[in-house]
Length: 562
Image (cartoon, rainbow, N blue to C red; front, top):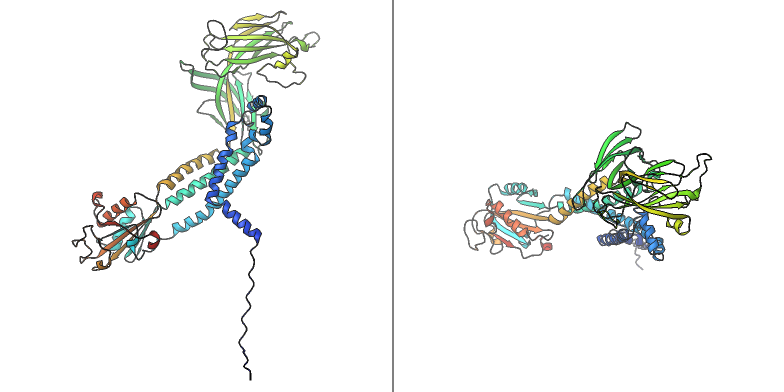
């Protein structure tokens, strides 16, 4: 008879599910992206990617320099422009590095923040069994009050303390990780601030001549150069400004000592109010800040045409960059010589004066450069041209420089040159006259709005504080165990007051003992001295000179103690 096995059959093993390769790839990619090594590489790449923006001219800052670069390097400039070198901080490759670094920092900070909060809420760990294995170790007589007194001593020294019976665990230095997280969080805030400034910020440069005839209102059309963020429309903050007075003081060498501008401001249709600002103290308005960048002179020139009609204009002469504020400019009179009887204008009778202004001209020729920025010996040199300025044809050109193409193609003809002192006049060959009446000061303004400025300020402070905490704070732990009387036999040889023989406070005495051990969690060269001072405080001896007694270095590894 055959025996029948009526035991239930073992359940068949379920087949293992193969991991999804796409999910595995995404998981590994995310781990690589959020690693500290990747963040450091991206930070280095961001610094390298910023080099073209520092070396090459940028359209958003100075489009004139970009045009000059095209003229100087006609073959290289188009290739650089195709890769976005003239708009480096808004290019695709810079934005890609920027966003990857942003993502990497957030992915790196989030789990570390969670772990740090958990560590802050957790109590210091329990005392290890073998304290002699820790790097720092000492045995000394138990103070009066036992574990409670030791815990109070540690708390006075700002240690996080927990008492478990006759054992005391203390920890210090969690601010190191706090500083590290503040540092990295501040880097994220820096990126957010830069992004806000790039998207919602704007700036424009404007030259403003003194006088009621030269009022500047905050519209995009009145800026010589303007850069608006992609999220900014043409509806800029409404205000108008008039330069009333400008005070410039210089050192004997010609270097500027101080600039101060007094203006009248009308904000959003309100009552005009006086205001003043200087180079290091901008004018703060609602929605914009006005910065003073520099100044120069605008010669006041009056031209009387052949019909006796006079036109007066204060023409800003741009400085050439020398200490004496030598200026170059163009005074054009396209509406001159209009027949009052018929109202017809001959375009070939338009007049322009290419000029050089020196606030303090040399006493003798050649008159090419001013000797001082103040007006001690003002001299205006003019070169007169007559012909078609090309304005009616819509030919673009600078209002500060004469279009030499009009001279080369014969549309403009040079008719003479003259140096004029203030108040002098010059009669041209056709009976027309030009007069140098004086000068008006002008200032160069930069109007800016950046919504990320406050974030950048806060994050900069956070970067410094976080870096200091990360570099100078050290995490360490101290463990104390109160031993009962007569328990010194189980301690390592040499423990006690450092003498190696019995005595008051020796392990072989009859009183209870305290075993103290310390563990630095990070490299801390000064931990031995700190531990010695702590042992001295527990013993009741606050004299730091005897702190080393009874302290010995542990022979075990840190992981063995843990």
